[in-house]
Amino acid sequence: MVIIEISLLSGFIMTSRSRMLLENRTIVKKIEVKANVVYIYLEKLNDESQTFILQLERVIQVKNLKPASIKIYDYYQPGGLEISYCSGVGS
View 1 (cartoon, rainbow, N blue to C red):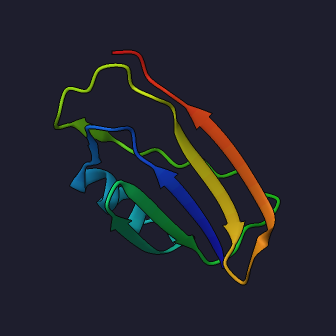
View 2: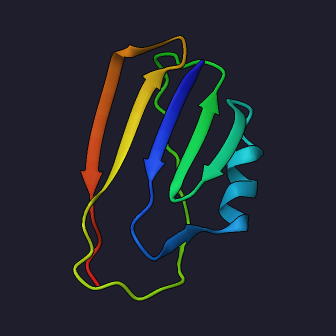
């Protein structure tokens, strides 16, 4: 099993529509939202490219937004493969 861990930007939440669209994908086993982190559990990955789009809604205006992080790792070997990516949005 593979986990995509997405730290949301401060002041943003994932929309319910976004969650519904992700849950309808056959590769997605489960989605958890804890505090400002979204966990997407995948059955497995293969050589096929995958794109995941999260729609976010701003609920609080935050100045000087800092980048968020995305981590991808194996559930059974969290210390093994890890890919991190950071991105921010302008306000």
